[in-house]
Image (cartoon, rainbow, N blue to C red; front, side, top):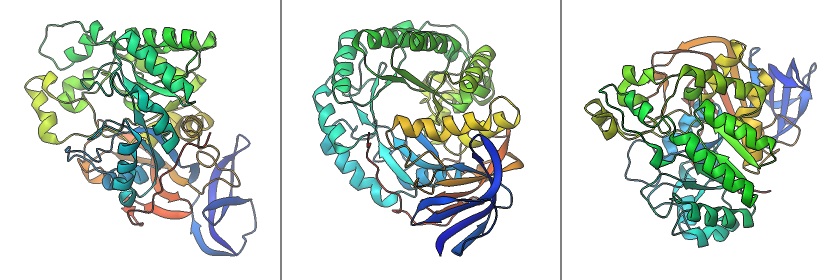
Length: 441
């Protein structure tokens, strides 16, 4: 007898979408059958839906611990489960920021009892915290992150000398350096009352920052990872440096694939994010990059704020904080692109699950439908179309940049280590079942 049989589903095996059953025991995938049904303690009828490996999102801000009431680890991991994400990596800019082993251990203790899905933590490094990289890596961070534009010295590496010090420290301990690459000095004041003027002001900040990071990475031979990349210019630079042998990886976000700066004029501060939304030609180039493998993976950069804070931007867009929720809509957005023939199902799985798991050093335990992998499985209805509305979201703020838009491929069920965590927007598990994962390689 096996523990669970997910029967009558379709899944990608050897690049072929086949119909069959997934056999699960002790939280792991045991194997697959096309016909015949081994005895199982529990049988789940997938009703011909597509089974994918659970999503791995290496870029979320669940605001825990923080004075920001917009999210916490409980609501954030519920939202992740609803979005088919079974492993998250939380960013270090909480209160206090995660820039030492002491704070890292306190954060693990603080959030462990709240998590519905498995989680990792990202360490932070900046001008005043370079000496703490080793102890954070030894405690188990998935990667280390710095910001080229930040008001906090413990997370900021704005000048070239600090960037070099940070890169050398991170390289020494064998983990990737995640960089928010926007050069503040490249901001150009633009006259205009439309919210989209914010995008125009920062149009080249990212590509200027990316160029600095890539040239240093080439000289220092450090693995750098460009977070939330938004522009065609940045992607062209990154692809050039990859061709030169520089160890650089890059992520983007669905709103950079599907929305333009004009969205800011419709939604105002609810569409404000850093880097800001760009142009249609940027959308098209980034979709090409995802499809062809130039972009390594797609994340949510889930970063909610209270409505009262965001709505300050209706008076002046600069007054609103940058960021919005997204962990629930990443997979439907990607599935919409897949069904519209912009990318293959194989690429969707790589950018949503496999490649981020490899980046965080947890593959093949996570990010794959393979014998021996954790039974993190997502069932998607390829025939469904749904309009994004407040009552469909589990994030505490009930916000989305895709509000009112129609997406395809609704997530029907999410299994984490063989346990049904979410089905039809209802959570079936309990907080605290999610486990803290350390980077293993």
